[in-house]
Length: 193
Image (tube, rainbow, N blue to C red; front, side):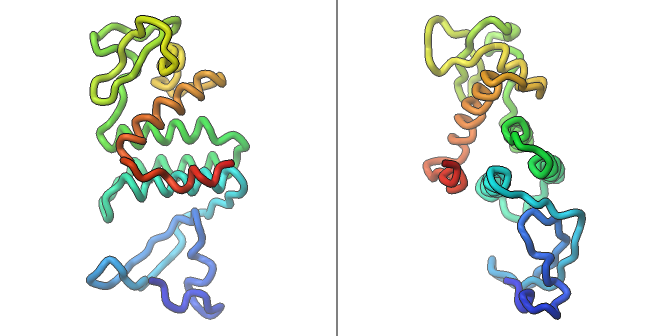
C-alpha cells in the first residue's frame, strides 16, 4: 500500500508508474505491506498500444510463474531488455519469444531444441513434435502440431526471422507455458483482439 503518493507534495509523486524501474522498501507483517521509501532506478519505459499489452503480458507471466520475494537477477535483466525493445519497436514478437525462452531456462524448464530425445541432431528440413518432459521427436507423418526443424534451430540460436519461425516458436513456447500456468488463462491475452 502506498499512502499519500498522489499528493503533489509527495516525494514519490510521479514515480509509481507502470514499467518504471524502482528501488523500494516496505514494512508490515502481512502480504499487504506499506511502502516506506521509493526511488527511481533507471529510465521509465513509455509503452502504448500493442507494446503496452505486451508489457502487461510480461508482468502477468512473472507474477504467475515466480515465487514472491524470490530474486531472479537474470530474469530481471531479460525483462528490462525486453521492455527496452518494446519501447523502441513496432514488432514485439521476437522480443516476447526470446523473453519466454529465457524465462523457461531460468525456471529450470529450458528446452533442448537442437537435439531429439534419441540424441539425433535436429535437421532444418524435418518436422518434429514436442512432448513436455520428454523433448523433441521426429514426426512420422502429417501432424498439425509439428514444428519445422528450421524453426526449432532458429529459436535455439535466438535468430527467429521468418513468419513460420515466429509462429512455430509462439506455439511451442505457449504450449510449455500453458502447462506451467495451469488451468487459469492469462488475462493479458484477452486484451489482444
